[in-house]
Image (cartoon, rainbow, N blue to C red; front, side):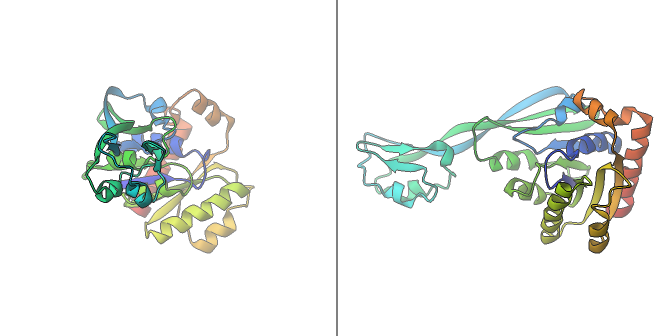
Amino acid sequence: MNIAVLSGKGGTGKTTISTNLALLLKANYIDCDVEEPNGFIFLKPEYITKQYVEVEIPEIDEENCTLCGRCVEICKFNALAKAKDKIILFDKLCHSCGACILACPIDAIKFTKRTIGVIEQGKKGEILLKRGLLNIGEPISVPILKELLKDLPEEEINLLDSPPGTSCNVVNVLNYADIAILVTEPTAFGLHDLKMAVELVKRLNIPFGLIINKYDENNLYLKEYIEEEGIKIVGYLPYKKEIAEAYSKGKILIEEKEYKDAFKNIANNIKEVLL
């Protein structure tokens, strides 16, 4: 069972909720925010192992290349350019499709590999913790997400801490999700981005529930929209300065009884409403 935790924008408390729920549900925690994974700061895994992620890129045999330019013509990603005396590769634009190899009439191109990031894996008690780390400056993170999300334990609960927003990276994470938990905050910006996230999970036909973070009962931004859409609310976290302070210090909220009760209520609602 894979549960994706996502939000329409950053800063809504998605990682706070994911890490605390992982501990409470004894679920594996998979940090899919490969450009800025910070769940390990709170969960502090032990026995970390690393696996580097590589992608294939073309390597051109300059001695045999006739500069016919067919590889440049066929590349739809503008990763190749013909200069006066060589073919130039812009490796970060390459999508490893192999079209250039097929187009070369004299087999002067072959694949080689380069590293774009790493998968780190550790344990906290019996819980599996994994995260993907995209190298700085790398524009394409999908290969890391695919490596991170393959072969997850099928008989256990895996919490997928999704990237923020509704980009293709989020869609890739949702492709592995059985259900989704959306996290929002009661502000105009929060409502705007929540609508996009709701539209996304509906289009992908994924059952979902909603957690409202920084909840203020006097704030009515969300109420009308939630009622109109018939969205299931699985829990609330209060708007408190102490939570922001705990986050800034890398602390787990369920160590405090008040917040542990709130997360217990959320966990029970997830089991009753979504599982």
